[in-house]
Amino acid sequence: FALQDELTESIVVQVAPEVARVEGYRAERKAPADLTVWDLNLRALALIYKGTADAFAEAKKVLEQSLALAPGSSHGHALMALRNYHEALLVWMDDPTDTSGAVLAEAQEAVRLDERNWLAHAMHGLSVMWHRRDYDTVVAAERRALSLNPSAALAHQFQGCVLTFAGAPREALVHLDAALRLNPQGSNTTMLLSDMALAYMLIGDHESAVAHAQRAVGQFAGDVRAHQRLVAALGHLGRREEAEAALAELLRRQTRFSRRYVDLTYPFRDPADLEMLVAGLKRAGWKGA
Image (cartoon, rainbow, N blue to C red; front, side, top):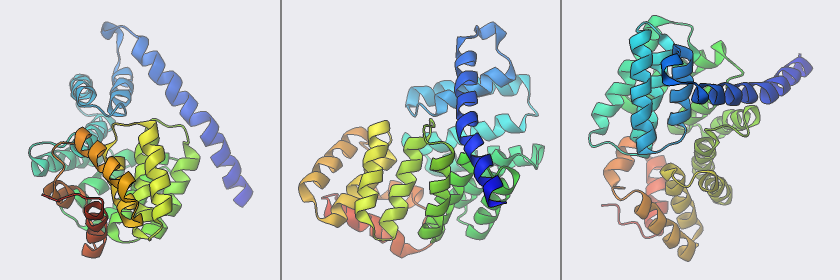
């Protein structure tokens, strides 16, 4: 059975990312008048993973078009939840509470429409953690997503993410490593590496945290979450000059980075984990205003 699992994972690693790449490329080349719901969803997903404000805005228009064609689409609502989630974290909305509520509403609708949609459950777990901080419900939702699609790299990544915030970073790293094995060249790898950096920092392995945050920034310089974790890990290591330079770069990219942002978008179960992150940032010279 172990060999069977290894063979299955090997096939998924080689085939799934290539299928996604080809299908996404095909959808991008089609004329707007010829786009189906499938094509629109693929186009929206590609826009989400670009990670820019303009791309998020365009993804919203594309998904609204998709949902107009198929209002009962669980997948369409799950993708809208994913879009809202990434936009709130990377761009920082004026009203994060309202935004987190929008993520939850779309995720709940996706689950209602199709109880077997793994992405819907994964997004529901993330949104409950962010909006309500009900950690038992969160972990159960992510486990449900994994049971529905154990080969989904994103399901493993989200499970790792919620376990990190729920106070189990070592267990989280098992799932984050699995996600990286399943899709090492994925469009979302930068955020996965950023999640790994946070988990390593929480277990006190700041060198690994720096290494993973640097890889994340190297893949996509616009990932402000990776910049935040790089600053904190460098601060903990006492590498003051590098930390100050990393902090300056973070504040250049995220001019509204504040303690309120940290409190609202880092939903740690254990206050000590939040203080570890904040302490690293402050050691790098962040004022925390």
